[in-house]
Image (cartoon, rainbow, N blue to C red; front, side):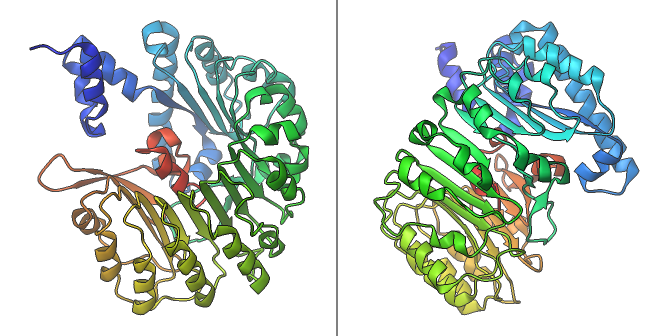
Length: 478
């Protein structure tokens, strides 16, 4: 008995990603299904010269040239398909531009503009990079259908007024996450955005696009520029601290963002940041995601008062489903107190934890493993490994029946793990990571096969490239 196309469409959505491409050659129906999956989110690269070397974190000209030719050729083919094939253009819902070229890329920008004019269903637009930046003329061609706008580049306030449907807005921040797979354990910044990002008139941008805003990414110094009416509607707020800026105005968030479900504080935090956290769990009553991620350059210690405030903020939050804590200067005595609170959060499904600056013993690693909830679907652990046995940790993680994403990070030295063994031991995993490198796990055969993401994909990864939004949330800012 033949099945209707609607049923086949749902079946195809559940096929492993490695098996989608062959469907292009099965039939017209399966071809259309595969196209909609493979090209609903695309990346366009403007790269070349010294900027490309910097983007790829390499000194090897041959490697750079090969990558540039591959990525630019694919980008041109995608833009040509969009402008020539309306049927193809209709499936594209997300466009991400990666811009690291020494030239102005005039031809490429004009081609992109023509493609933007031809995208009737575009919902997400991102621009990452300042070489070249997003021009005013090109910004005006972003379709008004866009709901997610992420601008890690120069922003022309006057060219965004037509984007009245934006519900998720990410303003420029100088931080790029993650770094490549080396054990740097610090932040990566874009020097071109370092000063520029703090000079933007956020109030003007919000006035242009904020009628239905639900998600916002801004710098600390811009908190006070967010109107109360915007705070009242926000569900997601990410605040990045650059230049060791303090969180003046954070009390406005706690007072007026009554609908907030997800809060991120990340960057060059200072000790006073923690004291701003309210201990009353009735503040932000709908909060189900919380992340605080600090760099050790500006935060050289966590005071007793600050730690007490952090623990008080976390206690009693029964709705908390996602939690990420990165305090690289914390000592084990402080980390152990954090573990006790984490163990009481019964609803956690996504957990990211940096265990601090002290090398962990076998006993201490066992204490970390003990608090891992059986409900976890995604886990990130950053550990200062001191030569202890990691097998008990892997054995404990293997007992998490729902875990599909695991990322491990050696703070000072790479963790001595064979990822193929990890994938074989933890059979529920779909993706595994080690020191900011990622591998997809293909389980269609007798043995799992690991497929490593190329460095340009890891460095500028987007939520569409992960199995689910939770995995992308956890990998961001790690």
